[in-house]
Length: 494
Image (tube, rainbow, N blue to C red):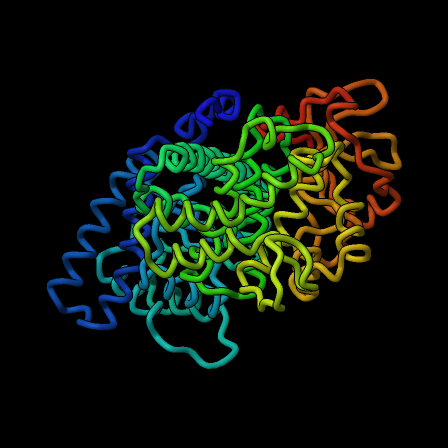
């Protein structure tokens, strides 16, 4: 179970090579927290308090560090992500003040601010005070602009949401950052599954800290942008697909959980259960687990044992708590169906847990589309969804299945498709309002693969004549899908 070198060989990501240095990112994060923390302090202690004055002085100190060349600080909020001086700012944890500041910006219609050297400390204090004041219903960013003019504050400019939203270069930064972040989280998750299954095989106790950390990262990523992670699930040609399958099922399950509006605690529990739903296969004969062909009765006899083995492994490998107990229940139940079929066979109808019903849908979809483990050939995603919805509907919770299909779309991110224009494309993301017309990356045509990739939104009027003809099998088409999923290729136009 330890030979997973090929699994991780494609993770050649150098985060520092893409954008700001580590010190710049830390300074940006610090000034952002000060910018939104100062109004909160002002609300509590007032502008004559030494604590407020100290924070204001610290803000200026950070301001001078960041603006030593330009003399200008810009802070913009685009699609839930902050940009400081046109660079995406990574925030590991959003403080209550930051959350409140974001809500305040949304209330006022503020998309960003620009601060130059010219404001005096009194002017800055007045500006921060304005951000804390309650306004009448329907107030807009124009009220803040008028306040700046009325108080002769000339060094601060306020951008509306519409003005900031037109900045395509910053949107592109965010898109690339989400993809890089998704790759990092995906491979980190695979390493954790690898380590833990190895420890489970050796009957060693496993500490929860490492697992909890990676599950939190997956939860955060799915909440913010699940399409970048779903794109990673399209890669099926790992040497040992067992680890990737577990992470894929976790991603799909969390995307369902978010749509069901589960809170973070329950999402973390769901993610943990999904990540280790198949841990029982660790103790099965390798020749059964990796058998590419159809199972015989002896193979099935072994395979039907893995749910019970998995539940026992979780209860003996981890310190027992409510999260581990829920995961053990899922491991035991995940091949049981709503219609009382499946295995382990039970004599009485069993009410399956919510987590089991979610993970069963995710597990089935990934198994059928992968062409691994007792399924001879992969099935195109749209055919799998049809099969699950019409031929296997009695096996699943209908609501959860519909939520999954609605979220993943008819054409899941990362899928390779042929367009009616005879172009070859990779699905970038789905358009919820037009499920049959996603955003795609054109990677080639009848003459071969392109060096420059073009982003195309099929839902727009200009592209309405282009449709998706069919899915393509990357191996049969001799296309290395990893090249387009793992690397950040330049985009020609949107």
